[in-house]
Image 1 (cartoon, one colour):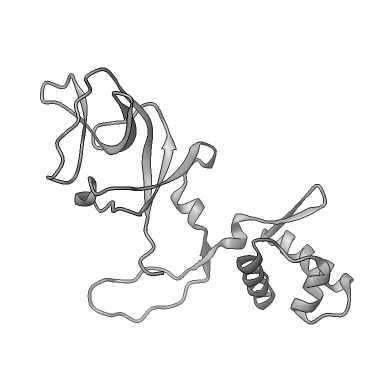
Image 2: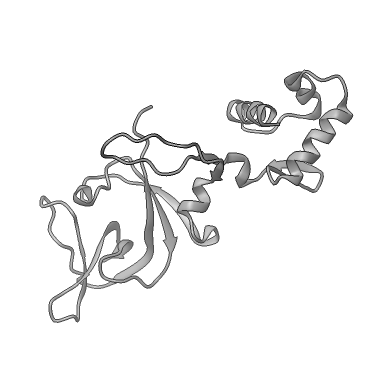
Length: 189
């Protein structure tokens, strides 16, 4: 079953869709659409696929990656393979209905490890706390910065994490649109 799931994943990566039953015949090396139907039903039972309005679609479990446990970044250790699976969307996104992605442009947050080209996962919120990384509109311009409160605890402002840039104090308004929940970076192409 795992081998067939991997075949479906490869097909999906290539064509950005699930194969038809006829294509699954070839993909799995089978001669009977009934055999393909039984395999698909098994995938549905196990939560890898769902059927809506006579259309088959992958679930988040379909895209799950094996979670092999913990690895130390110090001295090498022997690792036992753990058979748990984890989907990155479930791990990184607490509320999918109010979350969205942005690609970062610029270097004002490099001091906290947010780099040009990173993808940030933002949860839409109008309230944030000092220290949160926020997507904000300040004086009619949008930016990604750290929310701060001045010393007398009265004025909110935005702080970069790069000494090249000054803090941003609102002249007219500061409106929070969302809070960064995660940063995703692809290390190699």
